[in-house]
Amino acid sequence: MDDLGLPDEFSGLAEAESELRQVEVGVAQHGARLDRALVELVPEFSRSYLQQLLLQGLVCLNGRPATKASVRVKAGDVLVVEMRPTLQSQAFRPESLPINVVYEDEHLLVINKPAGLVVHPAPGNWGGTLLNGLLARDAKAHLVPRAGIVHRLDKDTSGLMVVARDRATMDTLVRMIAERSVHRQYLALAHRPWTGPRNRTVQAPIGRDPRNRLRMAVVNLDSHAGKPARTDVQWLAGNDLGCWVECTLHTGRTHQIRVHMASLGHPLVADVLYGGAAAAGMERQALHAYRLSFAHPVSGQALEFHAPVPDDMRQALSAWGLGYNPP
Image (cartoon, rainbow, N blue to C red; front, side, top):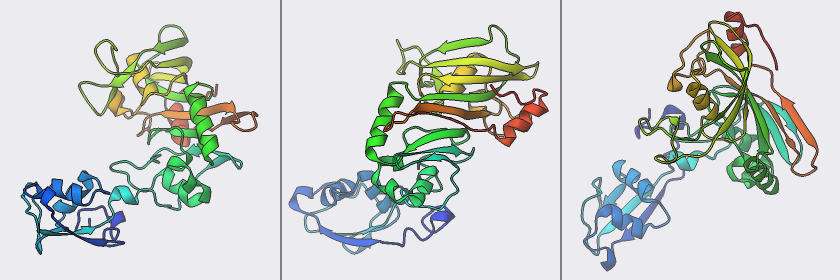
């Protein structure tokens, strides 16, 4: 950790590109709290960013460091603010990362994401994401929102994703996903022996778990916020230890397959958040986006891609005596 409490990989960023800004408190800010005065005097930055600078001792009031947001300022007071890049402001930086490209043309990419790779910068993962790798790989990615990412996979889910390379393609892909004309199928290894019909449809709305804000859950829309969600599940193989299934998404809710499988009494192997446990050598949720199909947003050509099951899932299938059974 550096002296600002940033992770080691961000050491030096705070010293880079810093800017000193001197402003004078006016009559309009007389008697205001320091944090509120800052928002008015340096309006191009958010209150949360300015509060971070206060906490780091980067704001001086009349020549002295000011760390209390509640202190009152007077007309004529002089504030000097050292503007430093935040982790958020550094998030959209190119980083050379290996990206497994399955298909590429001038309009889009299809990639096979490994487990463990975060798709988009977020708190706790401001760098080393797929977005950072896309920015380094393709100069055109800087011209497209979110570097062309139109849908996401969880960090520990592996498999196929489509990425746009221009704004028109991105807009079309977003619309196609909303219209459910981008087809996504997953393979999953789950706990407990399968019972009932081999093909099941789960149609259950998903929203934030009211008891645990880190989780999603099947919710009652009459009393909780949520959105309709549908997953088709097909049994492929199984025994007394668990089951190997194919899941087809008809909607794209956060953690949808993980939540729906848990609701069936079959949490995914190693998906601790939803009731699973490490087993058969799996230490990340046993979920893989293996098939992706859609009409090319420009040419209209039918495209279909398959990603082989990763080694850790193959080994887990073997450990449970299920072998590898592709659909």
